[in-house]
Image 1 (tube, rainbow, N blue to C red):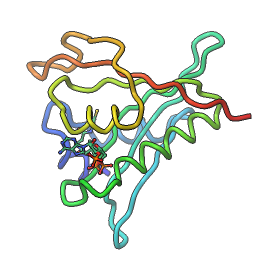
Image 2: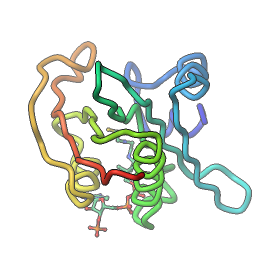
Image 3: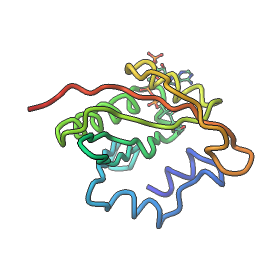
Image 4: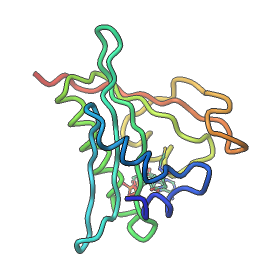
Length: 141
Ligand SMILES: CC(C)(COP(=O)(O)OP(=O)(O)OC[C@H]1O[C@@H](n2cnc3c(N)ncnc32)[C@H](O)[C@@H]1OP(=O)(O)O)[C@@H](O)C(=O)NCCC(=O)NCCS
């Protein structure tokens, strides 16, 4: 996972091995992976958050290795994570995305996410501002 993460994000945005371990092993974490020929092609990590009565999913990251992009792997990972969060009672997905990340913004908007805000300086150093996107999830009994 860390090898794919390094291909997807430049420092300081790269999650460390330890951060990936924490994000994927938390009791409220949901991880989806995509493989190609036995090798990891991509993954998505979300957390189920609880605030009073509201449960929602927060997308920590979605990574597709460069040679596998443009083949709907990101779309499948996103759908899989959303299904898992909805099945666990999450009513909404929330995420941050760098304002200049055209590929990811295209992915989220294609999948029905709506821009609901901007957070200045969300990313450390000069990597800048983030849009906040959300999507309502179907309620699964
Ligand atoms: C964003 C990312 C996960 C997309 O993965 P992918 O497997 O290539 O995505 P898909 O093939 O499922 O594409 C789905 C949609 O995303 C958008 N998209 C994907 N690549 C794009 C590009 N180069 N330019 C513009 N939009 C793009 C399009 O809307 C596309 O739908 P379309 O092909 O019908 O036009 C991938 O580019 C990636 O890993 N980027 C680096 C990591 C990253 O920035 N993650 C997001 C963190 S917030």
